[in-house]
Structure formats: structure tokens, C-alpha cells
Length: 326
Image (cartoon, rainbow, N blue to C red; front, side):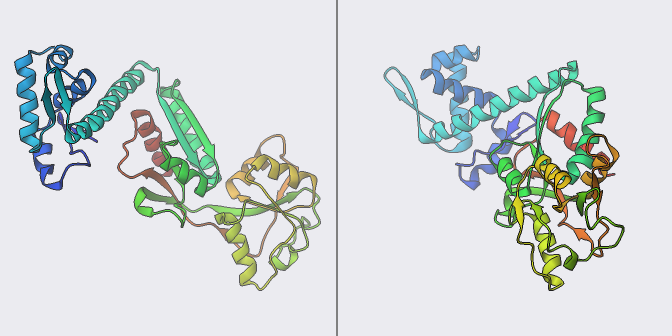
């Protein structure tokens, strides 16, 4: 529920014909009152919590009931009891007041350099090419922002986003989830490649074709992942049998170990392969196979849950990632 100029939009449980009234007349102070009523069960105690007079509290309750056109509480011999309408409004109001308090705290933290907390999920390529550079830039001005990033498949990340375990993700919306649950902005195409160990039988400088690859072990992401589908589509389009000697894993580390120590082949994001070859550790142990075909994975997007606002810290990271694209 979003605040706008000191007022709030309607609770979802009220009828649509109250929307205009709520937008123009229901104030944050009303939310504090209904929550105080629920907590205390007495108008006098609620008035004391809000530091107003009891007649002022009664007028505020009457104003809210006039705005909504429904009774919010019942007078009892020893206090008040919220009606179902009042309970619904109190529940939404409590959530809104907590969010406002968290926004205020987080903005103050950002002003003082204490930072904030961001939870991000990303598939491999944009994690390397977009998220990491954006995080490095943010660290210069806001060194205390705490960022947690999960690198996984789009299916896992999208479900984590819907479960409110991520602020936003850089991934694709899976086919089995309703796209109306998300707000998505396409930001790039992930290019992939095949990697093998240095000295692999296929790493002799020739350009390999699908038929050259079937007799080797493969390290794949689990079935249904977009990268795996891209490889399988390539084999099928060339009338080449699909690989049947497969290790399935989502672990990039295990993938790299298997490739570097065996003759296994693995498809990975091109940005990841280039990063490994440019760094220490496995640099020199891994090679990118030149192929007669391109491996382009479905475009990825920067995705938020629909109707869920980003915190100030999450908005900072979101905007910096968009800057990396530009």
C-alpha cells in the first residue's frame, strides 16, 4: 500500500467504489488510529497513544467511517471491538506503518553512510557483466550497504522473488509462472560457449560441429534450464543424437572441476568463460571450444515482483545496474 502526499490507496478488501474517496481523504494518521484501536481496545487509550484528546479520537473514527461508508468498530460496555472492515483496515494499516518506518530508517542509514540491505538474484552472465560492476560503483559512495546475491537458474530465482527473498532478479520469467506476477524489462541476451580442459581431444584448433561432441561426457544444468535447452535444440536441429553421458549440477565450481580434470564438455556463459581465462586459478586449465554454431540463450530481464516497491538501497543497486547497461 503506497503513500502519496500523506494519503494512502485503498485496502484491497474494500469495494472499488471507495477508491476515489480513499485516495483523496484517508490519511496516515487514520492508520495510526485504527492500529491503536486494535492494540488497546479503547478509544481513550488509543487517543493517549496518539497524544490527542478522546473527543478528537472519536471524531477521527467518525471521519474514517464516513469516508469508507462502513462501520469500523462497535462500542462495548468496556471499550470497542473492530468490525471485519476495521480489522481489515488495521491489518493493512499496520503493514503500511511498518514499511514507512523501515523506509525512514533505511533513508537515514543511507544519509549517514550506514547503508541498507539488498537481496539480489541473477543468472550467471549478468551477475558477472552487470551486477558485479554496479556493486563496485556503489561501494565507493555507500560502503556499508549489505548486498546478498544468489546466482542460480531463472526458475529458482523467480520463485525466490515471489517468496520475497529477493528485492529483484536478473533472469527470465519461467514458462510455468504467470508473467502478470512480475514487472520485467529486457536488458540483454546471454551468449554461451562450450568449455573443455587444456589438452582435450577436441582442443586442437579445429571448429567443432555437433556430431563431434556426442561421444564425450557432459556437465549440464538440470533438465529444463534454458542453457541446456539451447544446446539440445542445436543437436536436434542438426539431426544429431543428444548426449547421454551427463552429470547434472547447478554448481559452477563442480562444473569447472569436472571439466578441468576429465574430458567432459560443459556449456557456460561466455562472460564466465572469459573471466576464468583472464584470471588466476583455472586460467590456462580451461579452453573455449570454437564451434560451427552459436549458442544464444533467451534474453534476460531485470525483474521485480508486481506492485512491490523497492527499498531505497535496492533502488540504488537497480539504478546502477541500468547504468551499466547504458
